[in-house]
Image 1: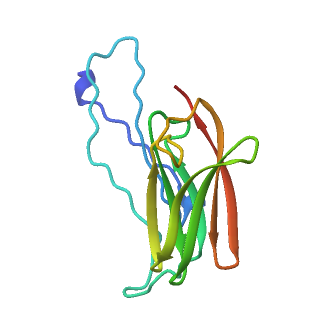
Image 2: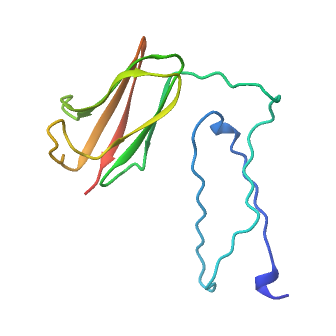
Length: 147
């Protein structure tokens, strides 16, 4: 049979990532192929009752890409309307930048950090931490800037 007419089906269980934003990528490595086709991609979620709403939980989901250059997107969720702050810190614990400092509506949100400090100066390569506070919720995560 012609290799172009042979198809292989793959199925992956992503249930471990329920209620999280994920990205799906396909990478093809071959020593003898000059073309790669992807057909009939289907991504489905868990079975739910129509009209059922998944309750939100305040969370700091992380950043993408990580490592990053020149910018990264930080994703977070707020359960109820509340004041939210997100700050960037260097490894010495010094605040580098305040990204968010306002009341946010309940829901999913993102903010982009372009690798600059509060004065608009580019920061150096290295490890940084981003901290989110929303009401009694507080979470800190690590990211890496690579130039």
